[in-house]
Image 1 (cartoon, protein in one colour):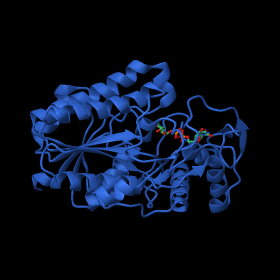
Image 2 (spheres, rainbow, N blue to C red):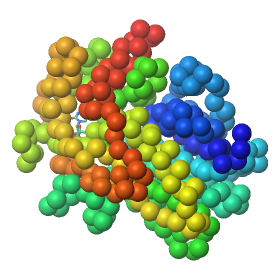
Image 3 (cartoon, protein in one colour):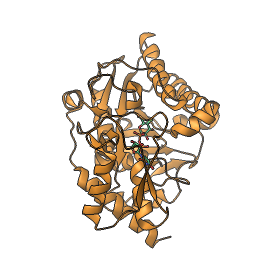
Image 4 (cartoon, rainbow, N blue to C red):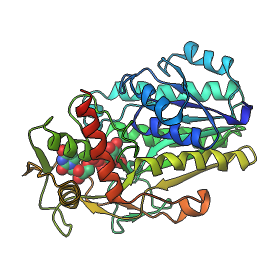
Length: 343
Ligand code: UFG
């Protein structure tokens, strides 16, 4: 395999990471996973093998461990890095901020130091629409929408992460960098062989919905019913995880075409806002399941309404979503049912 095809994927066993591995293989790349499985399960490797028809090279390590991580750069000639490895629970980041700064910022700096040392040319960073905070008037945010002060340490690690990359770029680093600002990934691979595997109680809406429907959770609580939106519940831009994964392949392909010292940031969403109640109603309609849910108080720190302006992602990456919102719900449900069957 030639060097241009080797892509190191930190956090490659995680939810978005694992779906990105599939897309990389399907597009002729040779992904190498670095993941310590703290927030994923080793069984994902089997699912990846079944889908791709081959073994994926993986290293069981913490990206904060410089020495161990360095061994990957020594063992493989790497063309690009996609850096997912990070903690992502907003609430936990408020109660344990140092964990987030250590892993999300420390890990990023470690990976970047090694990228500099080994002259890695291409770097893709997992950012988040959390960098926009609560949009002021216009709920559709574009990349030129001003960034907002973070409302959690987790959010701050994404803002600071982007800033670190800008500073590195401004220092003249010979590296092409793209930050992908994800909206809300949902769904699972259509095969039902990989999907989201929340550790403990899910924090995010869709896994909570599917786990309630399957009986793992008793009841879903809808956080707030009196928001200034048409049905009173919060609005997000839910994107199929396979579409989001494909954007990473497009990102690597774009960076490989650039002269060194390129940097940019791009939204990765669908451009469409959907409310919590719309998710619940669609889930019931599409699956025929009756969901046990109730209204509860607002969740602290929730953004009321946000969705992506997707013009730049289309122009820059020549990418747009292939899956519908309905596909994502159906695939998430197939995945949950598969998990139940094999439990
Ligand atoms: N929600 C419920 N009940 C639940 C879970 C969620 O009503 O049990 C609601 C939330 O209040 C929100 C919507 O469903 O209105 C979506 O919530 P998620 O937790 O699924 O997603 P968020 O948009 O809050 O969080 C996501 C990412 C974070 C990121 C944040 C902002 O999961 O990592 O977007 O970018 F920080």
